[in-house]
Amino acid sequence: MKKAACILILFCFIAPFPGSIAWYQLQKKEIRKEVKQKIKAGMTKEELVILTFLSSFVKQSLRWENAGEFEYNGQMYDVVKTEIHGDTIHFWCFLDHKESALTTRIKELIAKITGNHPQNRENQKRLITFLKTFYLPDHFAWTPDNFNKNHNYPSSGRLLYCSGFFEPSIPPPRVS
Image (cartoon, rainbow, N blue to C red; front, side):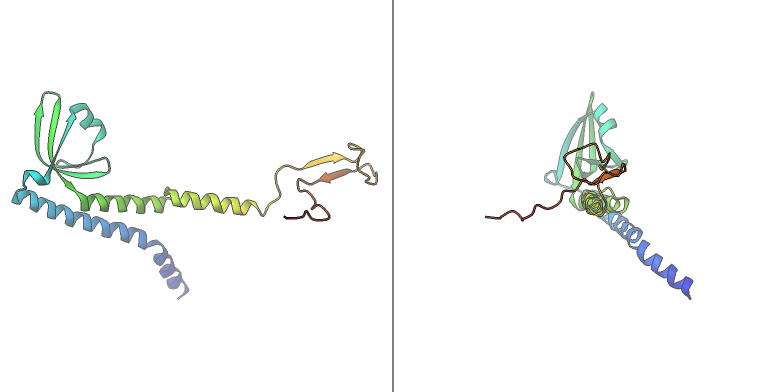
């Protein structure tokens, strides 16, 4: 019984992330089907965007999902028509806003899972700073008691610990 409860609790902690990614991938597949049907039905030139690139840029800078779809500047484009003129390539594309937003959500979720999300990093820095307040500082000095004659400590020939912290001033300072 205890093993089953432990497995159930572990599953509850682990399942949301892969489940969310799988759900987003299914939504992405549905959006791709919709766009494919729109392209087959025919699109007007007002619905399309013309992107012109050098062929060397296309090979280096575009992230291709498949033969007819790529990502450029965080936006997903579906290629409807391609024209090649020398070293220049013209793509007639459909700018897919739905898939771009979904891809952004997937990337954010993966960043949160792996700990690369900027908000997670900021929270980790704050936590580390807070936890450091529980420990003494690294700088403390062990000095012999005859090192500084200005102190009126009894001389026993032993080392004295000089804390990095200062004693509060007596009487307390006045606040105006």
